[in-house]
Amino acid sequence: MEADFPTKRRCVGHEKPEAVARLREGIATLLSRWRGLQLAIHNQWGGNDSLQKSHQLVADILSCFSCSKEALYAEELENFLHECMLLSFNTEMEDGSIEEVAEQLMMFHAEYLQGHH
Image (cartoon, rainbow, N blue to C red; front, side, top):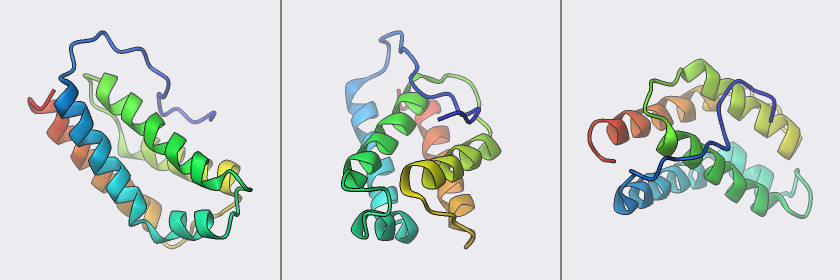
């Protein structure tokens, strides 16, 4: 992905495994309820590996969130999600759901930063 959203970070190793596991579960649950993404997976708009692409999306968001100790911007996350949906799933989302998902993800990250790591 070319968006400014910082994925593929190296963590320094101070994260609590149980907090990271809860964060991953929250991200995965939220994305599993995102209708646009689930339609893309079900209809294989991203190809035969659409399900694997959705798992990679969870991993990328988790990596960024669990390794970031600084504030992230919702607009960066929205751009990342938009680019991912377009490039990985050949899907243009114009229903406002990207913004809603990004807002909820940002809440997860804020909770994680408030001592849950």
